[in-house]
Length: 411
Image 1: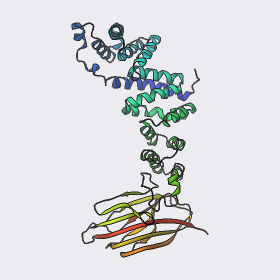
Image 2: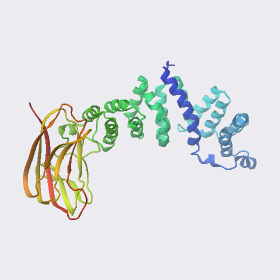
Image 3: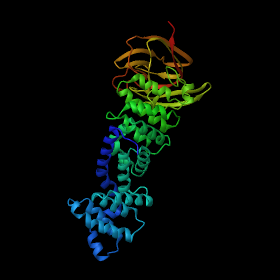
Image 4: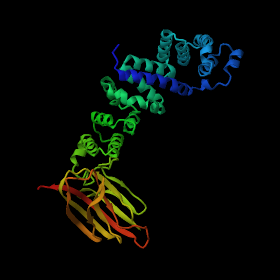
């Protein structure tokens, strides 16, 4: 038996309390717990194992449970005799013996229940608590994996123990090994650490160890941690995590502006393009001779919002912004521009106005300075000067953006 530190002891106590609070809810999922009158059913048929199980379940949740335990034990022994392969019967009988203080018999009954069904709720929760008490972290993770797969909605009940579990070296190792198998509950587990009451430092470390990826699910997991770090103004850490979890394809299109030629499909990560069409502007990626471009089609309506943006992390220095684009009968009565602004604290940095009309392969350029007392985080995006959505100011035509590039000027 491994020696536990004080943290694991506290964690074990909390797990026991969770067993008590969650056990009734989990076992309540079984239809046999809903029998309204198991006593009458047994009077009519003494060999009704389901009725015996229902009587045990009701007795274990009754106010006078302690006084009823010996009778419940007799009922449970009848249940396992009449239904020797019923995991629920063994699990409930184990709970009865546990309440009577006979932990050796209870443990044997719990193990029998799990041999018949690894998801039997009483046995699973009790043996999980025992694994916590013994400091058997590998067993803890194996049982949590079963629990979260079978009852994913119960993960929130274990949220308080997750940060402490990860602070133990063995706990972190076992957790990481399990998460690498991509269990279906992984995203929910990581989400616990992204909450204000969680631990974003642990979330950051786990995300780094889990590595990058190019699939939408992995991008979503990383994005939630990135937003959590940004909400706590840990801008440097957030951008570092974005860089260190990039795929090979990401790295090929990385820079001060990520995916500036729109070659990659946008993800939900905040340092990637966030774009969404609305009733005034249709947005799409389109194939062009040079590769891929972003097409904006204006729908003859006032345009107050253009949902194309990404966050930037810029060290102090002087920069040059270049935009290469085409336009076809573009009309923008209240202006159209690309801008970089500081989000924290909020202030404008640079505005690059886009000409109206029709043209091909036009490059717009300008320079700007990021001072030493730089902004915490920047935002790049398109906007107009329209304040009130009046149909006097209808936008029409189309714009194709081939590339948006940002380079640092040597000084």
